[in-house]
Image (cartoon, rainbow over all chains, first blue to last red; front, side, top):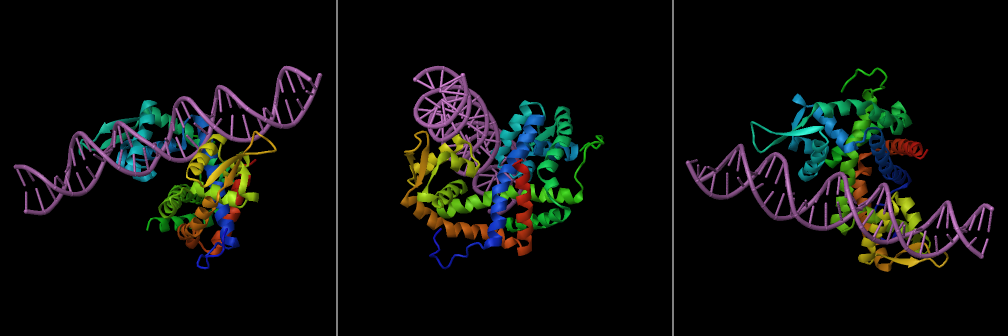
Length: 155
Length: 155
DNA sequence: CCCATTTAGTTGTGAGCGCAACTATTGTGA
DNA sequence: TCACAATAGTTGCGCTCACAACTAAATGGG
């Protein structure tokens, strides 16, 4: 890499180690977690997140736009993700009676059963891939670090 | 979430805080870094990584399979990523004289200039989104944590 | 009260990438 | 040496998702 630009504040050893360890790990980690869920429960991590959020919502239903904001998806991305869940019977769509523009995503009993079956396996996967590799101190440091990063991103 | 399964070792508060802070941040962070690079240099983070690795390789060229392994891409994924870089003139393909099965990805002078132009801007982006939010201590903890996680993944 | 603006969601299109199937080349054991 | 296995890379296909354009409904200022 060229070092001719004296203005550039290149990363030092500590900074580089943090950055490289992070960026080279997250891809594998996400892939492992998604694979675990696909193999054990035939669902993606994205679908799992939808089911979790719906199960925690009042009446197990949510407005699409709230769901999209929560999951960091664009409206179109959420529409397509819901399409898959509707087709397999885990979710249904209902038009809101208060505002007929909004579609409510509703968790079906079948979807709830699928989530209840998946949750223990997913937690085991998260432990195996992530939690078990960290000490309690590391977890606390990590939470503080990522909370700080996220706050910076939302400026 | 159902708690009827007594066997399941659910996450405690510290574990949950670490997991949630991590999983809800990385998507935004990756998106921000990619957007920065698209806007300032008209390239993706994936393309940037290819150019960096080629620039660090002997004769600025690498076997496709080595590149794929390094970037955690499947062969087909790498073929398509290279297609884009070849089309824009940053990379060319050469058949290896030693093994005619292998294609060498070669960084062109134009590709090298593009990388040299992009690097300071990308480093600034990484600082702004990631490094600047962390203390030196946090960086050291984070490097240790992710190194540990990555070692676990490669078992 | 009505038309312009805003908001919710869907659809067309295209990018990125994994999987499976395929070709081409090299290595290997009988 | 020759058939079979292993390896390198590409292509067809499907999935996920972002962007832009669109429809429909609600809102708000004149």
